[in-house]
Length: 250
Image 1 (tube, rainbow, N blue to C red):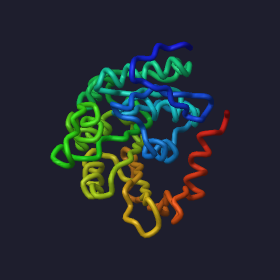
Image 2: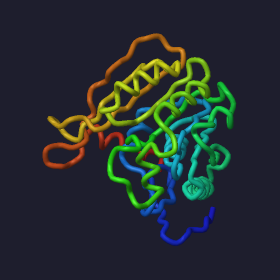
Image 3: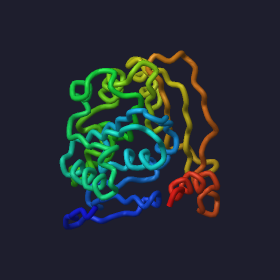
């Protein structure tokens, strides 16, 4: 479908099923963390999925391409990002499977109702409001810092939105792991699976992928660390395989 582009926007090829996404470099463009989360998350046939803080809609589009989930909903506070996400959905002909809703994560359970989803995914702001330098561009600041919602807000609402035994997937920074695990348990989401991501061998991990289950039993599997780069700066075989999944079906 032909979709109107706005000044400053670009159309990026996702290299899967011919799908593309509209982005604006001056706002927030998706990175490797979103791709890794889309590979880590498990979505089974006919499941209903919610992405909290969807931005320009990258996770719903990737998950719709990779899985047989029934429906994907992206919740986004910033109207400009939500508008780009809607137009990307239309461009790819995915309006029957993906819907974009403008709204506040802090009010998500009121917007959708309790026990509404089988799976929740989120790539939230990593930094608390006082951490880091404040970016002059408000959209980037909101995307990177907990300016509009906190980790506690996300997990509280996810605990309400998930059905019993529903699954929660998140990518975040390892330095906040104690807080993350405590808040997950407080929200009734039991940590079940974790994988650290390190830029290269010998370097401190800079990302963590987490799976939780609402009402799950206490037991967590820690998977082998994912290494992104070899010593020569090239991607490791596993990263190439993850990105290779992006080309299946073309």
